Image 1 (cartoon, rainbow, N blue to C red):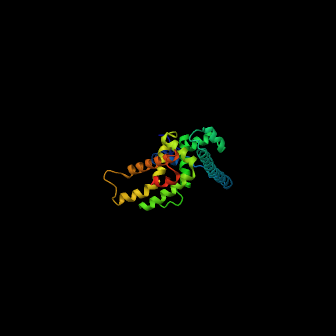
Image 2 (image 1 turned 120 degrees about the vertical axis):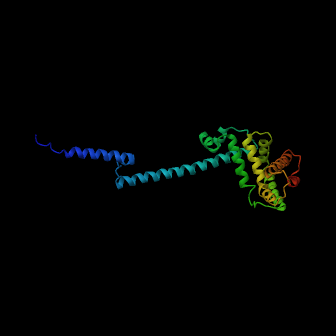
Image 3 (image 1 turned 135 degrees about the horizontal axis):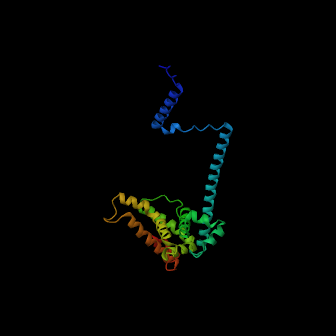
Length: 238
């Protein structure tokens, strides 16, 4: 017989390497992906700086957007204070606020949303000053008197609100927001009344809020139309 063939170690090496590759692939496929090289320190610092600048720009944009929203609300409030109701166009508002139409739509969605936001802003800054959230009747009456003073001091604005409320000029969103604003006077007190068990069976706080809010807006409407003298207005809202 001839000489025995030489043992091929290279073939065994590649066979073992292939089996190891198959074994690793079955256990963790991600382990076979190439490892991304680490960024050099200078490049890494530049990337971090760019990320910080982008974050700063986002913060600037947020602050800038908040300021534009305020300008739109003030412009709409100015129109309401002039007694114009909703008889103005969105283009007039954006021109007065020096804001683009796209900002108005992205911030409030519609004219209805802007009117609701302006009404809420006025109320929060004026009527709610010093409000403590009374849980007794005397406290509620004092807060109603304070709200009546605000109403008497802003006849044109209140007249516009009445038109929005009773003629539904501002749409459902404005109507619901105005009811919510009015109900804020009673909300804490009604919660306390419910906790004390003083509500009649079948009556919910939501029902009571709706009734009280409707009565209040009717009292305001009577004053706006001249049916109630100013000196008697506070008593009628009680």
